[in-house]
Every structure is written in C-alpha cells, then in structure tokens.
Length: 409
Image 1 (cartoon, rainbow, N blue to C red):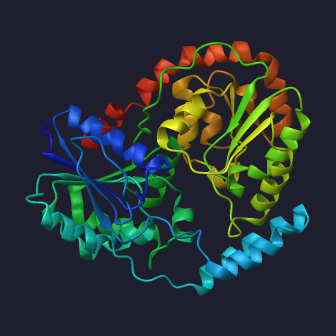
Image 2: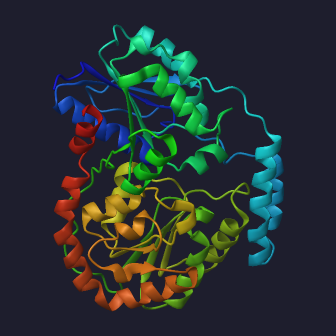
C-alpha cells in the first residue's frame, strides 16, 4: 500500500486545547508522523493553543462545527428564569425553545468548503494527500460538492460521529445529510472513504446512505493504567461538562444519598444562564453541598489535568441519556477503559455494549442510577482489578495507529 505524502486534518471544531477535538487530532497526527506521513492540521481561526514540534497547525476556518447550542440574550433570559422553577417545570422549557430556534433561525451559508479549498491551494501540491474530516456537521459537508475540486486531493476520509437524525436536526444542510453524502460520493468517487466511530453507527450510516461505512476506532492516548485499590472513602468522578443529555441533573441526589460513603469530584465547566434550566438548578444544589465530600470544578481543565482526574477516579459516573447518545461513542468512556477505570453507564446505547467486564454497572432507568452506583462501592477492589486487566487489550483496539490504518485502507 502506497502512503500519501501528507495527512491533512481539517477540524473546524478545534478552537482551544479543551475538549476532545485536540486529543483526537493530535493522536492521528502523531500516528501519521510515526508512519512517515507528514501531518498538517487546519483548525478554527480562533485556535490559539500550542502543538507539539513537527505538527504544523494553521488557523483556517471561520466556519464552526456545531452552533446549535447558541441562542443569545433571549435564551439566557428565558433559561435563567426557568432554572428557578421546580424540576419538572424547569425541564419542560428547553425542548420547545430549541425547536422554536431551529424553525426561526436561518443560519448563514456554511463557508467550510470554500475555506478548505483556499487553504489547500496555499499549501502546495495536495493532489496525493489524504484529507481527514473527523468532526463535520451536515452544514459543513453541504458545500463540499460544489466547493472542493476532487482533483486537488488523493483521497477524502469523512468520519460520521452523529446519527443522521441528529445531523439533520442540528446544524443541518439545505438537503438531508444522506443526499449531501450522495452528492459527495458522486463527485469524489473512489477517492471517498466514509467511516463512523462505532460499529452500530457504521451500520446505521451504511443503511441510510446505501454506501459502505467502515468503523474508525476512537484513537485513545491516555496515562498509564490505574493501579492500587480504591480510596477511603472511594473517589467518584463526573467529568466532561454539564449538559442535560449527560444526566447532570441526577448528580445532586446521588451525592446527598452517599454522605460519608464516598467523595466526589464533579467537573462541570462554567454553567451560565444560557445552560439548560435543569443543569443550572442542579449546579445550584451542588454548590450548596460542596465541601470536603464534594469538590466542584467549574472551570475548564487543560488536557493533562483532565486525564489525571479520570486516572484518579475509583468509579466514573456517566449518567447519560441513552436515547440521546444511542450508537454514538463516548470519548470519556474510551479514556476510562484505557486507564482501567470502571464506569456506570446507561443501557440501550454504545456505552452499555462497551461497559467492560462487569455488566452490573449498566442502569436501565434514571431512577436506577444511584442504586447501581451504591451497589458498586463494596465491589470496587475487584472491579478495579478486572478493569486494569482488560485495559491493555482496549488500548490496542483503540490505538491511533489502528485508526490511521482504517483511514489508509
């Protein structure tokens, strides 16, 4: 197999060193460099982070990967007031407001394809290079048919990380995403490689698009496997941001039910008045009980600190909405598995399929979440041993080199 001279990673979601965009992009860039393929990263114009020596990064895109969380002053005012309502009423405000915004707001035409075409022209001969889009919305992809000449690339790899329904709902194109992909496939022909980052998602996209979609395993780069037994009391961690679909509203009751039995670190990042009302309400409740038992982190964490937090956990809390996540991957679960940290996850989604050696860590309804966590506490010594033993195989399965091999195949 002949290798492309360069791997060009176009990542409009790479806006800072926070979150999973930088980790994914760096992992595949480093894997390419180890294979003798020169990496080039094209990031958001807002990106100001530092890259390792040997990985050039150009701030390129005014186009954004996801804009569905916006809403401006009106959203902040309504959500801020709704957060003061009782739980059931607070939860009922966000869905209709989001739907109204989708109906009323007409986004400007997406500029990703045009910006990408300009960047390729400015970076020499790209006719043999492989271009990777590992995070792109339907709006981002919509301009690729008319805006990106196929002859300027050796190959184009697109990783689909959300379901067709989600892509047609959030940051949608003028056409359904299946039609957009059909247009890209017609234009790029055998140069196009479609992938998804879980097997269920790949199967869904294969059925939706009528084209083969391969699995691109999440590339995990993590600290060494966790060693030692659980703390006294055990350390329970929620990390990665406060969102309603992440089950953040279930955390206050769990913390209150385990007084004296566990200590918690809840990493939420900043929660402003534009956040979902149930998230704001839960944040206020946890601020009221924060102390020796509960460490509340309300600022973004640099990548190294974030991974160190996961590694320090005895049990990871992922009380996600299974209907919202479905076949989608979870970068946090992938990192936890690589470090030998067990996690409590919801049934009926990819996370349940990949929970690891002990399926008793899966909860079937939100009301079961606290019970599953409590039942896991006395078994943590055995769980940590099991998960540490399983971690090396997981690291091989989700290595950056494995992902690169799929991109090149």
